[in-house]
Length: 210
Length: 210
DNA sequence: TGACAATGTGACCACGTGGTCATATAATAT
DNA sequence: ATATTATATGACCACGTGGTCACATTGTCA
Image (cartoon, rainbow over the protein chains, first blue to last red):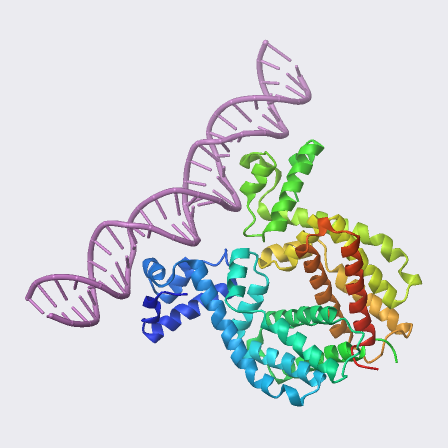
């Protein structure tokens, strides 16, 4: 965690540092990301940086925990009405919410995508320890519930299903990031929703001719 | 392409350089990968390296094209008998062949996985220009054929389907790399085949209760 | 005002990087 | 044996890195 000095900073300055760090960590992986660049971009001296944070990892974990928190807050509304929805609707909501999140917070989404590719094991485990892994358990819970309600075939391997969902989630994320999400328009949006529906249709009904 | 000097090298030495480069490029992305390390590991001087290759990118593209070539050669047998198989069997063969490839050539598989995460645009486009993109077009062809044969629902969006297959392929790859493929045993193998079958079953029949 | 603590600063360090080049060695041809 | 060409070498360069530290500046009490 950042030192007290950092939290004593005027809000503007603190946010500037956070924003610069997010830009940097969404641009490059942990090793490549540059403390010097973060300092330059937020107009603080190198020495100040190391007064706020013990080291680069300290900042990295902090930034990631901020992003995770934001995402959880963003999804919590959707999760509230989950009980009233079918599994199909639940996943549809989850995907569309995910797309909305990526559109509204492209920086956070880029951070997540960057993290999923992170090589540095110490950085990875430090972030995970700081609180993650909730998406997998959420998926698992959804599947269990749907099973009880008799919505899905009992022969489906839940692990395979989760593997499929996770890889899809990452693919959609990447797609959103590569096709500049900021210039998204109604036409793009329509198209994206169509793809999501197509995907979900495949997942629920399969591709076999009836 | 490497200079003539490189191809004049005795085979042992040349292979040592190639092997060292593959190790390095499978370990780290283009920017992080170290020419110094490659030199050390293959017992050649820095100066020699730059007599063999114009720069790091030159070596990178060469190594990747070797890996791509190896993979194509490996798959060509499977592709030959494609006409006699159903789409399900085709994909099953493709996945199992992919797993076999990753098991037999973990270094090549790691290179591919590393490349799929590559950030450096110049490195990426240089490799692609050197001949890639065949997997996507292969998938597309398979789907078209199956459509004609009436094996898949005509309402399936081929693009969504390909997105799904590509993300799955990458997920399986990653899974194989993380769970040390070298110590694979019959038990693991059995389990992997089961997961692949589960995945394909979902894709073909969907998860909905019948 | 003076004393003391908190915070800001950037020159500096050791290190690793990709790439260069003058020089040494080996191989070949005359 | 001599001249010429191909190859091997590692010290060296400029640069960017994460991190340190002696010192300057500011804020806060008495």
